[in-house]
Image (cartoon, rainbow, N blue to C red):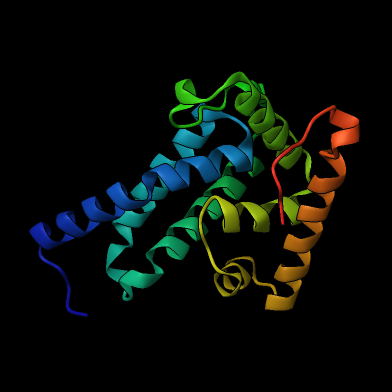
Length: 177
């Protein structure tokens, strides 16, 4: 791909930012548990993406490319300092005002249970359910085999089911399978 002129570069970057910033932010919040740090991670991700935009040859790989940048930036941040932890109740979900109190309770239970999963199980599940990535894409992203990803996603769902059993919570929770 030839080097882009400034207008093409800006157009391409703006399109990436519009398309992926919300997903990256949600993944960042899941990854670090803090809105402010997640926002910083997304900003750093896009700064690095801007600098390396010419290296993105396949537009179809943009999402994985950006997630890789965000994960590496998180690792760099984590090496420098321990990120602050915020209360899970402060995580905002779109159109929350339209949800019933029961929906919010179920959502909060599910969100809490997902945050409590070991990272090796939670990360593939979040990449699949929140980021919409395929098993193959997750395998590449996490440098695992597809069967390892499927196993981890399965185990994550099983762990969530165990934590969210109606007998323990006094009600029916979302079907996870």
